[in-house]
Picture: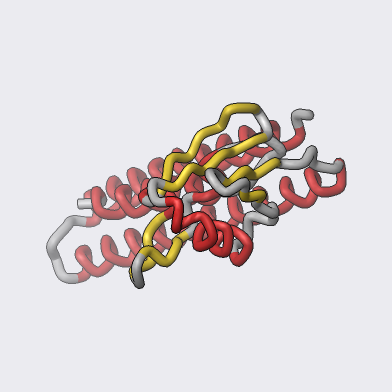
Length: 181
């Protein structure tokens, strides 16, 4: 009965993890490029599908396009994105050098991580509210008894607590990663 709501809560967690993967923490992480699309013959295409992305060093990402003609297009897409790194193009591949983060920038990133975590918690609580409203309507319609209503609401609360705990863990883990020099 509440499975679809549990599924929505899990989707919130998955979305939060994708968001966190796109935050650069001073180390080269190819996931910061996940949201970048390049114009591949008129079609917006994910960057991963037009070239080989590697991390040869802790603070360097290289992108080797399968077609040399794509170098300028990829470079332009990276410059227009919110990655905040200027690509260097040597005619064969693009290099992204990640600078060391300042203490102030790290603190700003941690604030951003916490903000995204709070938004995820709000989304989870909204799912809980929707589930409880559904259960109350089912009770009024006579589909479930008063005891079933209480049992299901308890289950919904346990699921909510579990997923809010997962958000807290994700916030803690990402914050620690960012603050580690």
